[in-house]
Every structure is written in C-alpha cells, then in structure tokens.
Length: 257
Ligand SMILES: Nc1nc2c(c(=O)[nH]1)N[C@H]1C(S)=C(S)[C@@H](COP(=O)(O)O)O[C@H]1N2
Ligand SMILES: [Mo]
Image (tube, rainbow, N blue to C red; front, side):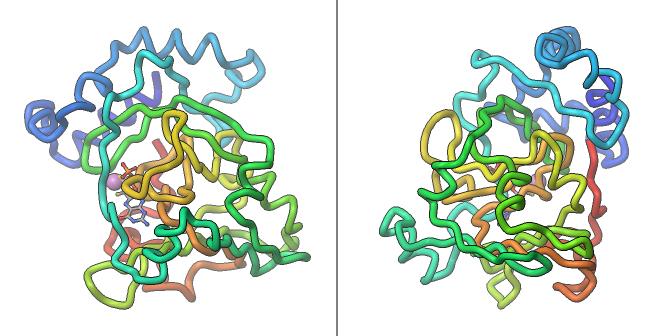
C-alpha cells in the first residue's frame, strides 16, 4: 500500500492529474490502476512474514502480480533501437559474440556470454515498472540475480556502487546511457539482469540482450542494452557526475518507489 501511495504522491509532485496521465497511457493504463486490494493480496501470498516485517526498509520487496495482470504489449520508453553499429552487428548475430564485462573493484574480473548468464540460476518475477513520466506497466522478467553475478567476480570491500554502461548513444552525441546503484540495491532479492520478458528472449525494444530490473526504483534506473558493469567507490567521475544519464539532467539518484 505504501508503494501505491508513493506513486500517487509522485504524480502529484509531477503535476500530472489522473486525466492527463491516462491520455498518455494506452495499453498499460488498465494495469496501472489495479485496485489497491488486489495488489496487496497479491503481495501477501508471496511475501513471508519475515519479509513483511521489513516492508519499510531498503530491502523491502515489490509486489508480485499474476499472469493475468501482464500487459498485452509492454510499453517501451527511451531508446528502442540503439544507433550503434557495433551493437547492431552483435544483434544481427543473436548476440553470440556479445560479452558482458564485469570489472572495476573486484578480485576477479570476468566476461559473461549470454549462455553463461542463461546457465545461472534464474528468477522469474511478475512486477510493475513505474516510469517517472507517470505510467506503469506489468511484465514478467527472467534472469540471474545481480548478486549471484557479482559473487562470481568477488567485490572488493571498497566497492560501493555498481555502474551500468549501455550501448545506446544519447542525443546523437558521444554520451551513452549509463546508470548506477549502490551495493545494497545490487544485493536486493529482486535485482535481476533480465534476458527474457514474458517468457521470450528479451527483444531489442526492451534492452536486449540484458537489462537491469529493480523491484523498488523508477524506470530510468533500469538500464537497457547493458554492455559493461563496473564496481566503483564513487560515481562522481562518470558523465556529469550524478550517477546516470537522467540524473545528469536533474533527476534524483536513488529514485525509490
Ligand atoms: N539504455 C537505456 N536504458 C534505459 C532507457 C534508455 O533510453 N536507454 N530509458 C529508461 C526509462 S526512462 C525507462 S521508463 C525504461 C523503459 O524501459 P522499457 O522500454 O522496457 O519500457 O528504461 C530505462 N532504461
Ligand atoms: Mo522512464
């Protein structure tokens, strides 16, 4: 319930009335307006008592929905086809030669192929994506937990943030989309590197071959087209220094919901 309230509050802050919002929403409108009782019941079935006790903490989990709640067409936003020839050629080959580099403040930097990630234990979650623009959309995401991937490279104690560098250049210039989260969000039980949406290989539109999926943060934190993950002690040296492409334009860094 606190989640729904905070989403409402965010809409008020943005000055988006319900009417203005629904003009923009299309197929996801119905899903974002699920009755409050339904989402609370949905989460109660899934949460353990121990987890419920921590609902207000940073480790609180987002509600899970049912297959019936999945949007028929997931809404896309931001880049939907990176303007990047290297990315396009990797995509042309089904990402066979794509490798995810994971390095920085780690004991053992590694590169993961898509098959490496697919062979790891995976989580499937039906969760709601909330965009700062005031729309929401429910989808089913599958992929390894980020914390399991990080366990393979062994973060050093000095690592405080995880940077995600993406394939899509922004504004036609040399600035690529990027994001960052802290180690606590990286270790969250719903933080995935998703390679599938609704049981299908993740389409390019939604961030193929992998995109970040977070349970409790706004859409812009969930980097699509992730090519490189780097553990760092500070995000200040990157971009304009605010931790992500949209943060550099003035959006808040933590972006909790
Ligand atoms: N690489 C990259 N990641 C991105 C974006 C983007 O433009 N490029 N847009 C962000 C925003 S604002 C949102 S709401 C979601 C949209 O994800 P979707 O297209 O799967 O709905 O991706 C986020 N991650
Ligand atoms: Mo967004």
